[in-house]
Image 1 (cartoon, rainbow, N blue to C red):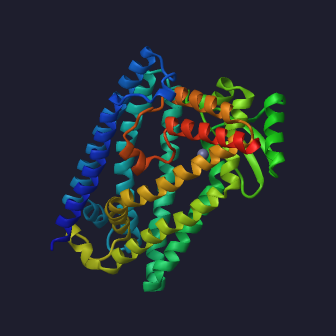
Image 2 (image 1 turned 90 degrees about the horizontal axis):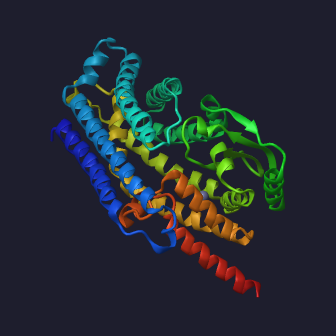
Image 3 (image 1 turned 45 degrees about the vertical axis):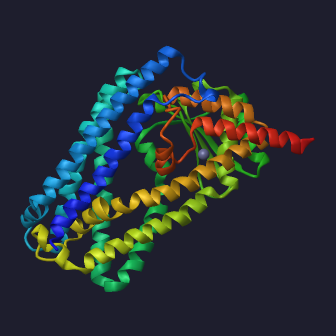
Length: 414
Ligand SMILES: [Zn+2]
C-alpha cells in the first residue's frame, strides 16, 4: 500500500467530514426557533442574524476548502521534504524546517480568513472593534507563540525518541500533560499580552460578587475588567486561579450590558463548575486525549517507512507531527468530540443548577438571554451538531432545565 496515497485519502475523509458538519450547520439556519427563546431577536434582528450566519458559514466553507487544497498540495508535491532538504542532513534542523513551513502555510491562510472574518464580516454587522493595528499585532503575537510551541513540541518528540526509544510514548504523554498544565497556569499572563485589565471599582457589583464567593468558601484575589471591547462587542466572563483563591475577569462589554445580579448569576454558575470540580475532571479526561496523541506520535515515528513516500530518507519529527495532527488525531476527533462535548454539556447543566440554588435562577435566564443577544447566538442549531460539537447546551435547553431546577428547589423548600 502506498502510504502517501492512503494519507491523501484519509486527509480527504477528514475534510469531507468537516464540510458535512458545515453543511448541516448551514441548513439549520432556517430551523424554527423554540418558543422559550422567541423573544431574543425581533424580526429585523433575526433577519440580520440569518444574513450574518450565512455569510460567516460561507467563509468557513471557503476556508476549509482552501486549507484542504493547501495541505493536499504540500503533501502531494513533497514540499516538506524539499524544504527540509535545504537544511542538509541535520535531523534537528530539517525537523524544525518542516514545522516552520507547516506553521507558515497555516498562518498565511489563517491570517487571510481572520482578516475576512474580523475586519469584513464582523465589521459589516457591527461586532468588530479591532483596529488594523491591533489586528496585525495580534497575528504577529499569535505567530510567535505558535512558533515557540510547535518548535518546542518537535524538539521534544525528537529528543524523547532519541533518548528513550520505545519508552518515549509514556514520557511524551506526561510531558504534553505538564505543558498543557503549564499553559493553563500561564493563561492569565498570556491574556495580558493581548488585553489590558483594570480593577473593578468599588460598588454594589464588587460587594455582591465578593459576598457570593466568600459564602461558598472562596477567596477573591481580584476582580478585573478586561478591555474586550477593544476587539469586539461580544461578551463573557471567567475565573482564573488554582484552588479556592480566584481572580474574577469580567469583559467590559458584560459590565456595561448587565445588572449586578445578572453578573452574580453568571458567577454563581462559574462557581458551580468550581464546586463540582469540573476543571479537575476536564484535566483528567484531557489526559486521555493526550495519551492517544502520544500513542499516535509513537506509532508514527516507529516506522520510518511512513516518511519515505513523502521524499524523506527516514523519520522527520516535524512531518510526524503533521501526520499526527492533520490526519490521525483529526480522524479520531469526531469520536473524542462526541464524548467530551457530552460531558461538558452535563457539567453546564449542573453549574446552572448551582446558580438556581443560590437564588439566581431568574437572573441567570435573563443574563443568558442578554449574552445570547449580544453574541448573536444560534437559537436552533442542528441537534446532531449539538451532540457532536457543542460544549454548552442550547439556550432553549438551558432555560428549560433552569425552570425545572427552579420548580424542584421550590418544592424542596416547602
Ligand atoms: Zn459553564
